Length: 456
Ligand code: AMP
Image (cartoon, rainbow, N blue to C red; front, top):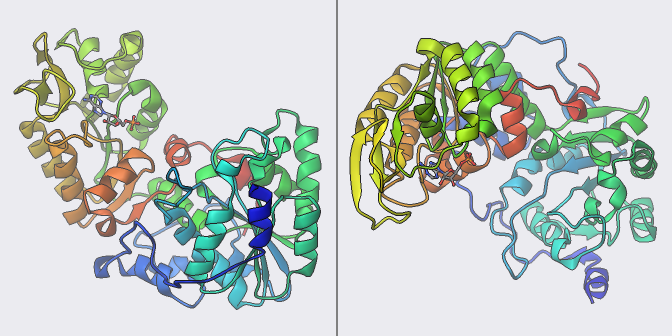
C-alpha cells in the first residue's frame, strides 16, 4: 500500500509554494544577520556578519561554499527528523527550513542534490509511519520546484533515480534507518552500506546538526568512504559550530550560563564544562532541588535525584561562588495550574508541596545578571514552563535574554521549544536545532562526524 503511494509520487507536486515555515517565526530586523542567512540568494559569507570576533581554530572545517559543485552530484546528509501528527502531517518544519541555504546554494551553482536523513526510529525495517515522503513534499513547496522521491536508500529505485538525476534537480532518499546497517554495531556493515551511498556522489555534505553527536553510517562511514573526494560542512552545521563551540571558546564577558530542566544527572558534564569557561552558572528547574538535598535542606515532595546528591555536592564544591542557586521557590500541592500555591525560601519547601518554578526574587536576581551579561548560554526551563503560572520564571529569563544586547545562544530541545512558545525566538542570536548534539557540544565534546570532514 505504502509502496504504491510512494511510487505514484515520483515527482512531488508543488501546490502551494511559499517560502514560509509552518511553525516558525523568521528572524526579525534586530537579527538581520540571520534574516540575511535565510533570504539571501547568495552564498552566505558567515565570517562577515558574525557578531563576535573569532580566532581561527586549527580545526576549522571546509564548507560547501568553497567547493565547485557545477555539474557535480552532491550528497547532503540532512536532519529531516521532523515531528509528525497522527495523520503523518509535519507539525514543525524548522529542520527542513534550516537546511534550505545549503540546498539552494548547490542548486544555484549548477549541482545535483541527493538528500538523505533518518526520521523516527523504524529500527532497521521499512515502516510507513516513518517514511521521508512528507518531508519531500514540504521541501518541494519550500523550494518551489519538483522534488524526486526514491522509495529506498541504495536499492534499485534509488540507483535508477540517482543515475537519471540532472543539474538543478533534487532527490530525497527514503529513511536511512529502514536499513539496519545505518545504526549497526558492526563497523563492516556500516562501511558496506556507506560505500554504496558514497558511490552516488562527487561531494559529501554534513548539514545534519541534530545527528552530529552520532556515528551512524551516513554521518561517519560515508564521509570516510568518500576518500579524496570533498567532504564538507553545510551552512547549518557551520552556524551551529560557530555559536555552540567557537563563540564559547572566545566569549565576550561577563559570560553567563543558565541551566535548568529536570535532572542534574543529564547536565552534569555541561555544568562542569561551563563552570570552567563562564563567569557564572545560574541554576533553575527541578535540578535545583537535588542541590537543596545536597545542602541538607527541605524539598517537600519535589522532583529530586537522591542518588545524585554526591554529584551535586561535588559540583557545589567545584562551583563555589560561580554556581548560583535559587533564592526562593514557587510551589504547588499538585501537578496542575489550578493547585494551591505558595512561595517559600529555597530549601524550605514544606511537606505536601512541590517546587514547580523559581520564585519572584530569584527571577529578579537572574534577570539582573542577564542584563549585565555580554554572552548568555541557556539550556533547560526554570520550572514546569508548559503549565502556567509555573512558566513565570522561564518567561522572565527568556524575556531578559531577548531584551539584552548579549550574544545569546539557546540550546535545542526543551529550551528551544520554550523560547519559541514564549515568542522570543526571533530576538536571540541563535536557537540550536539539536537537543542532544547541542548539549554535547556545550560539554566541550568533539564530534567524530565533524572531525572526519575536510579542514579549511
Ligand atoms: P530537561 O529535559 O532536563 O531540559 O527538562 C525539561 C522538563 O523539565 C520540562 O518538561 C519541565 O516541565 C520539567 N521541569 C522543570 N522544572 C520542573 C520542576 N520544578 N518540577 C517538575 N518538572 C520540572
